[in-house]
Image 1 (cartoon, helix red, strand yellow):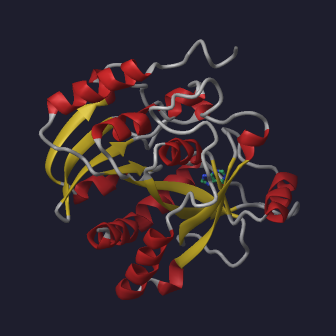
Image 2 (cartoon, rainbow, N blue to C red; image 1 turned 90 degrees about the horizontal axis):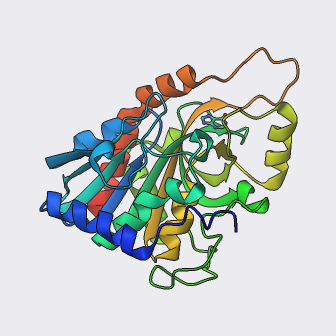
Image 3 (cartoon, protein in one colour; image 1 turned 180 degrees about the horizontal axis):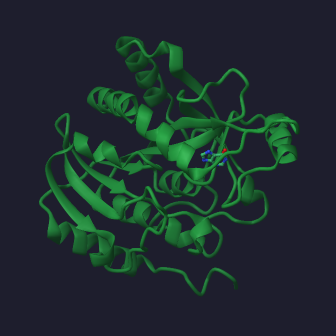
Length: 286
Ligand code: HPA
């Protein structure tokens, strides 16, 4: 069966997790995945240990500009954490279970909460470039075509065959984020919405953007959803935040063209605010 050939066994995941636990005294409860241009989030950590992906047994390598490749262990607001500086995308050519490989490693290392960040295009007309959108829900569009990281035989030691996704984005964490945004005076650029994943790497056509809006999506990107599905499968609580780096083009007469340099520039401009918000949410997590 397609996908089964590249399957990683439970024992193989365990070997990588045990290898990592032997490299650091940190015992992470919280994992953070840094999206495009958002690797600066690791600056929040104290007592850091950095491990480049190429040193980690079975870890994929990051190939996208703006995505470094290392795990950073450390402490934030009294919580032991592991940050992924550089994530993996399906469009890089990895099998979908390689994209999500780190999340299972986090679970086996004891992680109970995951924060996912990403850069995305705004579909909602009320959104502005630079807005921070807390992810309320997602649409797994590749999943409609059979691309779900849980396809294949199920490993019960990770989770059930048919995991629930109606509670994918933890309501309590979303509330903490909205309280934090208020305290920080971020109301003007703080949003909540639905994130839709497409595999990319080509950006969306005008007709595709029209379709995504009709489907109820507020933002569109090329990541996050596979990791969230695998996290929820193992019972990890998820908080997701999307930085709106561009407005998608929905008008055939528009001269605007999205490109990766703009995405990275806006991500850098808003990185500080995103970092401050994430730090505040972590502080409030029990
Ligand atoms: N589309 C898809 N992915 C993205 C975009 C976009 O407009 N912006 C940043 N990531």
